Picture 1 (cartoon, rainbow, N blue to C red):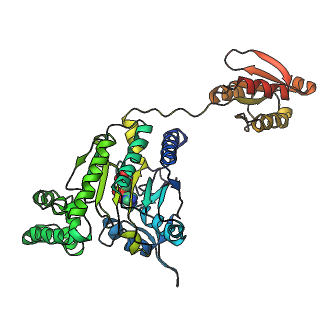
Picture 2 (cartoon, protein in one colour; picture 1 turned 90 degrees about the horizontal axis):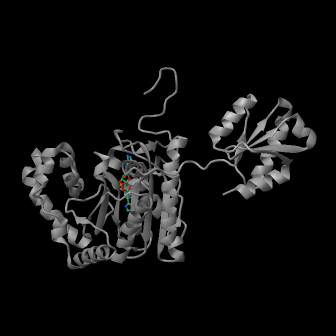
Length: 425
Ligand code: HAM
């Protein structure tokens, strides 16, 4: 809710406050650990790319490119830029442009950061959101598809989210998709006039996206539509069987769902989604799949590739729904208190000495009374208050007060550092 006269954040964005960020750090460190364990390396493409990149890769007939892009029009002779609606195109561009795929043919990379889609905001759906994910480039091995799914499952396990479903499907490849496209068109065409306007347009541009329509009447009609999975060629069928065998061996429960087509144009063969019934309408925790032709289409080598992206906000919502309590912010070792104004520079110096020794803590910058400073010490969870007044200054010492027991001692600063370090659990 906005208050008149006070600046407010743009619709569909969120401010992340210190209390919320404990869960975010927990998720990020769980993800980093899993990426490391599975041999993925971090990459950081820029926040925005040339708009044409998304037209060519995410796809012209997708909702993202048709209506959700945050685009900055060209200035003068310059390029048009778009804030990334997803990471995959930028990551593949990064691998190609930096010649990484020439150095070696196989890369496993991960990423984390904000993404932007001009969608209608609702719970779990934002205009600025965050994704983490992986792209594994340079192999057609179905076990790699399995590995990316396992990586996502391991991250969810790492943050205590276990209540979700994995659904998989196969989109086939260029070879078998032609015959399926014809079958799907033949099914839809007689009733095309009854489909929504979006579907009629998609029928021409990318008929598979008709299956993604959310309009109830179209959904009902599509129930009986032929499925890609029933039109797979032998190679794609074998690949899909191998993925399913691998997932079973990895001990992951999953369902084959013929209706998953995914909202992006680049997929071939395996596609998958992780969803949680606890999230409401926006139930997808993340999704991904194989895209064996994209790297070549973008000017790179002819390389098989597979990856996924997860929605951080959705995973955090699932953590909350699962009652996962992220560990509270680390408590401080000390709070340095000035017994009078003259002691403030000395208090600052003492705090710096503690921090230089690796201890954490703070001091007052608001000129508050000793009583108020002691309240801050309490609130910060500090184990010790370090007091300096006229007496301590005269002696060149500091007064250590244990916050739990109230025990006090007056010691030289280096002795105080030793005591706090020794007491550091
Ligand atoms: P995607 O399904 O478009 O796939 O997005 C992945 C996840 O990002 C979604 O499942 C959801 O959790 C989250 N997400 C998407 N839009 C929003 C939004 N407006 N607000 C909050 N969360 C959102 C991709 O982005 C592909 N790049 C995945 C991939 C990687 N495929 C191959 N490699």
